[in-house]
Length: 508
Image (cartoon, rainbow, N blue to C red; front, side, top):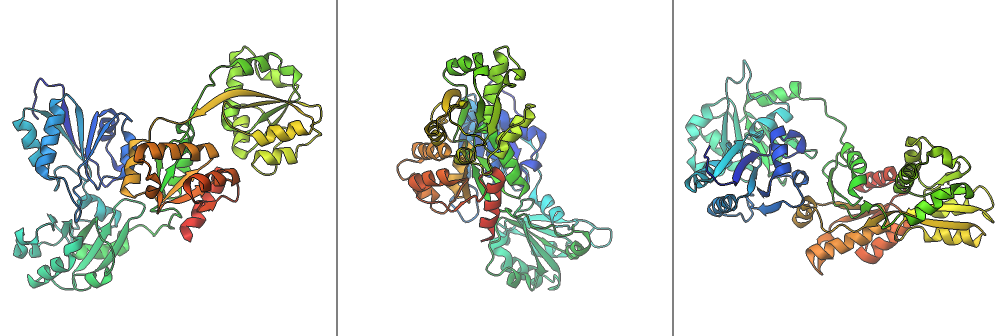
């Protein structure tokens, strides 16, 4: 490692096979702290969620069959960033020292007197066989193995390679037939087992098996990149050593853009991941305190004058109850009120706070609360803590039309964030997003604002092949108006209902 007086430093970091679960602890810490990320095309967009929103981003290609940034330019970029005093992570798929071209970058950094470090990652040469249930070594069938790149087949000693018991080839999808023919020509048995593992360790991992003679026909017409090719008798052990085939997860291979507020997104993202999806956060809401608490404080001061407390969101529950406690009262102050909630999630948050709703309408929209309200609203005094801007106008108008006195107070605000997170922007630009989900009308409106701000007037083109999932009728109306489409609407207007809709869409 080189050491200089410069404050800048470059870390060559191995990303492993792509999923965050296979990133080392040190690697995750570096991503959290880095000023600049220089990354390859095969790096999973989900890893970009580990970096700071202020992180500078450089995508430098290195994808077979597609335009790539010349290595000399990457070297110069790393030197320039380091000399500017930046903390830089050069993120490479797999391990930096396994066909990662790390040597050229290190030599350039050392020549310029730049400080650097190398952090290992799991190479696909090791991960892919394990994920497929194939051992690289075996006491009987394989006393060792060789790992090669198929990037330039003419550079390899095929007579020596053909004598090895177990072979692993990286970057060989497009050269598969030629690779097999060369091995057969150099006296490898045509019946030698072959396995191809694509996207090793990912939810959408694919595995094909055949022989040197048949494998090209087995995968005919299939897209193989990125893959590793494994050749040898140990491939036959997969029948005995691979785990029983798991029931395919319903959203495996789907990338879902989650537009919920950051404070609310984790639960939904975890639900999606449990179904096999890759969830990428694009918060289209920023939940915060209202501009002032005057309305809420005034209502709390005369809380015993109200008949009902109406709560239509988890945010309303938490912000209102927190303010009640901050004002020196406790939940006994609500003893004279009845509480009505809209939605299963709102009710669950109320229960978590130790309170029980007196009324929950049969469907999870505010209109249903008006229709099924358990007593005549005429003359009742209703306290309605709500979002500062926008919200349930229909509920207020209908209740007032029936004679209720409704006091609306701003308990929280939901604003549009300033920008789209780096991971979400990269996923949209690369065409990786399959579906975008919306849990409210406001997320649709803010999403449209963010997209136009980020991608310009032609932003809708970015969504041409992206499905649009809506949680309910009002949200769908905004989707049609601003996005021009709704692929499906949840039958039950809840997050589980939205998940169920995604599963049905994925099957179609």
